[in-house]
Image (cartoon, rainbow, N blue to C red; front, side, top):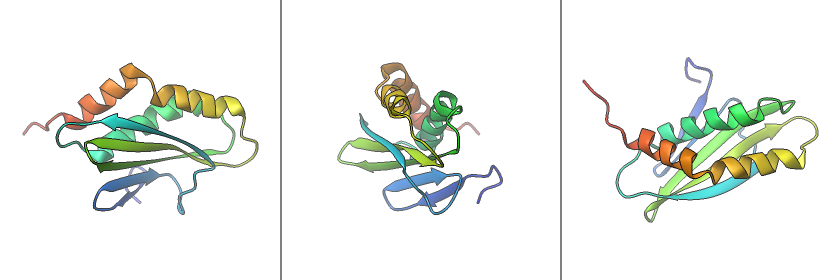
Length: 118
């Protein structure tokens, strides 16, 4: 676990971040994002996780997880996580709305392609 309290599971073409292991997706929504060039999968995952938390922080017993896989000119983002207790339909709807938001998608990709200085 990193100092920030998040587990980062890296594979050749994927990264998963989660608060708890093993990773569970009781709540899960997927979206694809087109990419043209290299991107930081970890940056995308953290941006999605932050925005997802803002939307779902009132969901009792929620432990976020995000998996980002890259291939064939696209990213597949799976967002959700573990939920202890009842899972209201509005949580899935809110998450779907977030992953399809053009402004969020643009920001995630811009952040993931930004080069570090120094």
